[in-house]
Length: 268
Image (tube, rainbow, N blue to C red; front, side, top):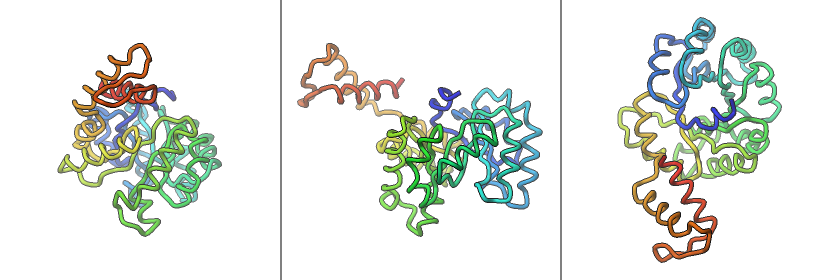
């Protein structure tokens, strides 16, 4: 199951209280679907959303892509019931919001009986990211919630420190590259692609999506450019025997070859 989660790059959120959208989401072409009990569902609709999830058990089992559930955060009135519902479903993983400590990750895993992807979206979450990364299968970044918690702008420079820490924490824990947060707009694909390209440059391995229209531009943003692929192939061809050589006027050694290999793998 962990290898399946490692391959997820572009998971799509769907409100759990909108079961009529589940089949369309499963067929949209995202790497995974996250049925959301948290932010996408109003407080008065939480029980209805949970009931809709339980009624969709067979559809989840036949989805054809990994299906995850985002539960409500620890400490909320709905958290324990969400975990109990998740435990009865054939899920690939649980998404835990407001993850701030390894103990919360462990409790969620016990309660749902599923791997946990931890959403870092608070000041305490960033401070505990390395501990959480050790406990969870993968980290996700909630930029909008973190900006609200810090009282800062939802801008790249204001949140660069958090993104860098989440990428570093994931690497230190030996986890797959984390997934960046959502782009709120979906009618114009250009900002989605630009955000995805920025996330890829920082070391993120994918991005959370909120609409099927975001899938194609996000995928384009994470794909290496033609120029990058051409450079990588020149490097690998010139350094096939492992010796340090010059390519395009620059020396190529082991770390450069590794970068070239990763670019070619992403292109594939």
